[in-house]
Length: 379
Picture 1: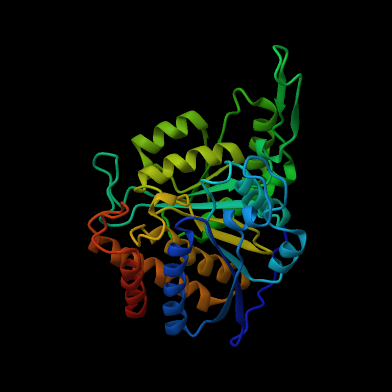
Picture 2 (picture 1 turned 90 degrees about the vertical axis):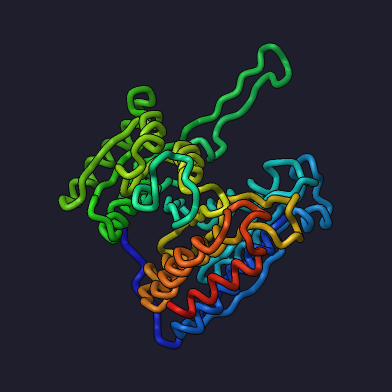
């Protein structure tokens, strides 16, 4: 697949759309932007940000029904505006006053599909001094990446319900798999594996080919054919249930994993736990040739809103991803270096924290942001 040509210039000013979102989202976004400012200061990176209020409060204020979707969470015109930016930085989605699914589908899923963010990228990295629930495992054991296909599979919404509410109720949910979708995810995974600073140089396909023979067959044929173009990268396969077992038993086995939408959704939640929890897990919804969105994996945590106690590390890590991935795909080494500085700063900061749990970090949300920003400036 053709990649967008590098367009970075020394005086290029990047435009970042910021969506603070719900609950504690604005609090962690504030710290991510604080760290961005520090990274820009030391690398010479030029940028500007604009904030977009796509939140549960706005949905309700505009007349949205709290129990069912009645108006757009984000409009067509707003999406058109977002497309003029270089990247999107998202805080959190989820409001206790709005039924689950309305905001998630209306914002997250809609943006993924409308912006063709076909890769969900989930680094799984255990930071120093972050407790791992796996006995005897440390940072050297938990360091891999999951590449999840992000626009197909079960989540396309194909299917329906007949005779709803009766004993004859029938529902179907179709798993939409295309060679095109599988191939671009697989190719991204092999390219990423080549770039990673890992001695394993291995891509593992995760699926359920023994039962899901049609969809699994498409993925396996694609994996084998595309993988043949990468003789320097080892090729491996796991059934998804076996993968879950090996995550717990031997996470150090993995390098890069590629999988479909629903399996990726499930295994990355397990992965978040082995890397220390959602407070440190970040991810990106990528369109390598277009507009990508980066976010912490934790929810909006409404019970902690306004208390300045939530852990911002995941949001800061998401900012590091935004810089590194955007810089990689736009050919700008300053952005890549800025992202690497953020990563090193997190590694320097987590040993100073007592815990990753909200209210138990030994520092407030803003103080953790200050620590990371200072570490970024130090290098």
